Image 1: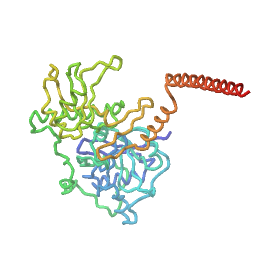
Image 2: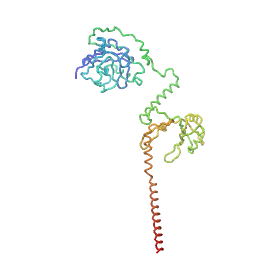
Image 3: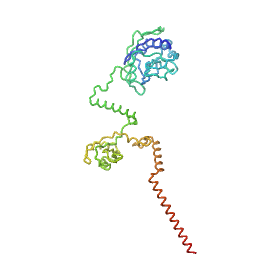
Image 4: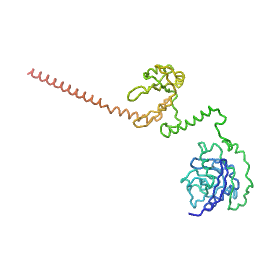
Length: 407
């Protein structure tokens, strides 16, 4: 172990403040670059342009694209010193949350971009990017960064920016030829023209909305949450899966009502593809609810509006759209596999797997007969053998009789 000498920088952001300590002994060049850029107010209004949950939060690029930025040495020596070589010795690893690391530009060179780690033991970053500090105060900033809502490219929907950087202690002398400002610069137009939610803009989707709409939004959120839970436990194939819009659920039926009765009654709204009264597996008795599949969703909708609370066989039935997704898939109960059902356009998903399962099933049934069938074949073969013996005996006796007659 070695004695670590640190220097601190206070970083103020739109979501809170935090303090970082720099490893000036192990990473003198990287620490000097970061300290002088902070003193130059280079990071003021810098956007956290990339946030990956439980991974990193990246900033320090004035172009906000992940491909810009320059080191303090560019101010000292010109464009040829835009980047500087990374310090790899001694090796410092990304072992904890809140590590401050300089981004590798791909050629083992560094500029101005840095990131904070949002998880522990990110071993695949070791030796690639240069750890040169850590957060020592304001750890709640890591939670806020980790909870930021981002798009598919990991860009936060709401701007999270560094507003001020304050160097608490600087052991390095100021380089010649660099003019350090006496005060922080004023905000520019890019804060207003970012195309994202502003840094000071309140995000409240429930504000100024009627109670009914708020209740619908809350119910929709709860439904999405439940769908994701059902997907995780395996009851749904995917969270966005929706039930078919041409199937009705009919309940409160009389036990004597049959599929034929329902087809006659509901058939006046349009062609019916299938009608099934759900029955007890052992007794075969009706469980007093059914599913009716129409050929057209419009006919299904008309039946929904017309048939609810209608009297059938002395029972007031209840009609609703089916919430079951079972008809979207064909289940193979023995293997547990599923095949997507053929859709309206005649296309089949998982065609290969369904054809394989169908062919194997037909082969299995054709080659393997029921025991009752085999016994029937056995008895049949015995009868045929007895008949053939009797016919051969009769022919033999006839031939013997004719032979004796000739004699």
